[in-house]
Length: 281
View: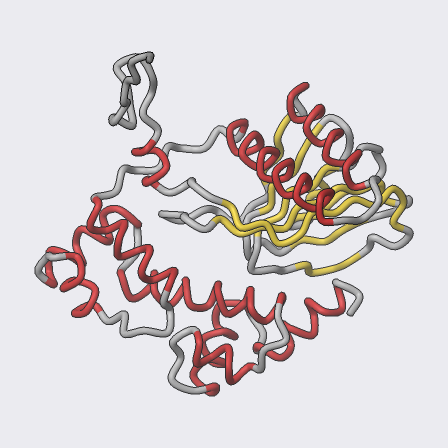
């Protein structure tokens, strides 16, 4: 009988521990939709605004997105990563051969500029998007959709690896737990006093530490998270506005509408109508 060796350590002296990077922020994606169309006839849309991120790639040239008056061409040599709440126009003078991913960064610390990011289509990115498009062309089915999920996740991780972004600061374990609570239970009591107690820090130290590591106050982070999650629910579910308000920690629809309009430039009902029109609903 052979001897069995038990490896109880998650890391070794020979590898690179990635736990600190994952805990810092860029650790997971929630993918809402993976799409591919070989020839979209009308891809002209003004003022596109969404609470989720997008990754765009067009295998054929001819179309672009317009951001603050500047045209950003789409084509086989590039990918375009568009952060949430970035407002832009889709310009399609020719039928758009278009691949896209809609997703949410589920663990994000610090602010990200609302500006499209152009990424060079490296050989690896091209190979991965080609494989994903081939899967899109297969007959619909559960097996195909599972492959699309894994391929789309791998494509996003590869795109973010190509993005020359500043490293996220390492977060104390106590703050990570607080951020996870805010994401997981936006309807709960998320006052500074409650969160500081959960973190095991005094109120003053908690607020100072939170702002140092995220760039904003706890109250602003809580509000931004609640509004982001509410925007996703408006765009992707049929829940009522009152239900969405309650589930995301707003005391009533009036206050929710006021805060939402301040953030997104329109009320929840108009925002939902825009999203449905863009999705052809």
